[in-house]
Image 1: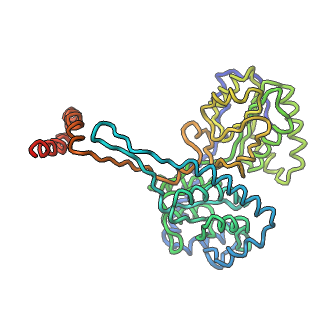
Image 2: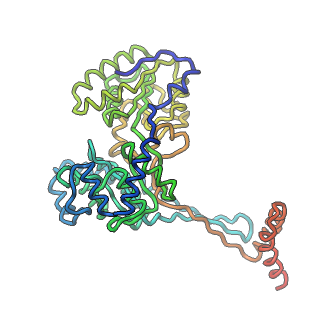
Image 3: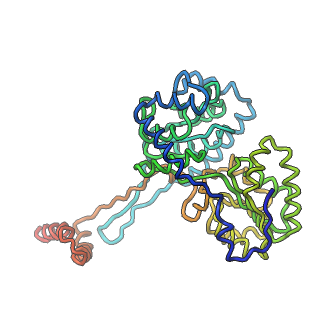
Length: 430
């Protein structure tokens, strides 16, 4: 059960904020072998590794048009309607993120502007395993489509019968993504990074995964393939005071704990009676969860901390930098103003983190393991490059030229200076 800590000294906070440590470097040797196999054998390596890790050698590596078309009949109407509503909300929120920067005349005759250009080829990794994360496909596929990415490759591991979950296929069809590869794990990352006969190499890879996928993404990023972020196990920090509903708080903690045994949940509170009530609720709700085993393991790595006031809760939260932050406190609006490090923030007693996971509109692909101190979650910006442009008229170069010449000379870069001087000479001789 959750470890209880009362009024820890601030000098211990940094240690408390550390996540459970895993030696991911020891995984690299095996992943390098997987990379080598995929580079040498291509599609055949993916089929062999599917047999080894997923228990099936698919009859074909790519999902067929028939499989895609049949998916809609394999899920019920209620789920299709829910997926469509989530799609609409996520699309509306992300469409508003589009940048329309106007050209700026920094001085007379010197015009500068910036344009967003879609990354042409992107790869989306969607875990299979213990849960088919079609919600993650929405979170990645919607902004990819809005950005205008021309080639979107989806990799996801097959089930024991060689199929892909119909909710994933229905969602892919809704998004207009039709190149779907039955491959998971580090081998899927390798295929998207290096390419095979059926999988074109991409420029950037998105999506969460287990420790092998996480390390594989980090390894290909060193080889020149961009990744969304070094995401790890899911986590939530709930900040609660005496106004919080213990049952709500317990449900929020468990909603992250059930992701997997390596997830972590943290409760910060100013009220010991609330903590006791939450603990009781956690035990009650945990017993009714189908994924009780996963949640129980995660709770062993989790903690509940009693602190004197909201200011200290906020300070600890900013140090911890949670993936998800829930403010179940009376003055959540003013406290929210002080949030500096978090992936996504949920305000008030009636804003469950689950809403952001599925359908409110914000993205749930977020930085974990303290990376929220420097990284943002996935957005429309994640799928574009920002390219700057400039145009200088002859009069503009006369206005700007002297500044460039002086700076270039001071840095000892004569050719830089000459590139301006030769033009100024031409202008002055006209």
